[in-house]
Length: 228
View 1 (cartoon, helix red, strand yellow):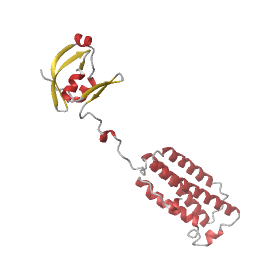
View 2: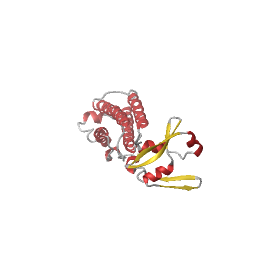
View 3: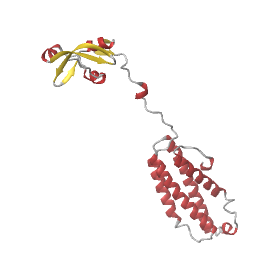
View 4: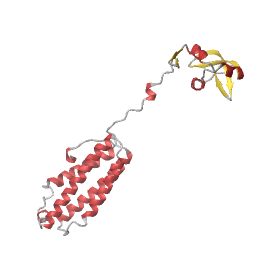
């Protein structure tokens, strides 16, 4: 009976067997096929496993075998690792991970709510000492912390930097407005229609919010001066 053994299974099962083990094993001549090359070899069955001797393997594959520093060096044509299959797929370092995209989107939503609350309050003269704004600060800080945990790629880290800058900008603007309220200096926003349009900090925050709102769902990091 002539049998073809797959090359991968054969290579994994190959051992240079001691002569005593060969003598005690069941054996028979079979045809071995490796990478299109065939030849007759003696096949040994030991404890339910199949073995052939290395010399036969080298002869069939037109390979070579040598002994170096108590090691057997076996070279088989066509057996070198495939560089294409063994190399991990190249990835774009600017790509954002799915986890970070979700967490950063949540952070941006909280920052937008915080910004809109501030803008509405100063335009409509809503009194307050800023105590209720602490809730927005804490929510945004918690969301940013979760985004930081989910940042796993280079793109995530770069986007996190912009998101952190946005958090700091909104927080600083909030502190500034609270201080102005305490000084009773917020009337300029309610009596001047273009006050927010002339507020550089608010315009910068708005521009960064729009940029992040477009960039983050796209899954690829891009930089923008408004978020620096």
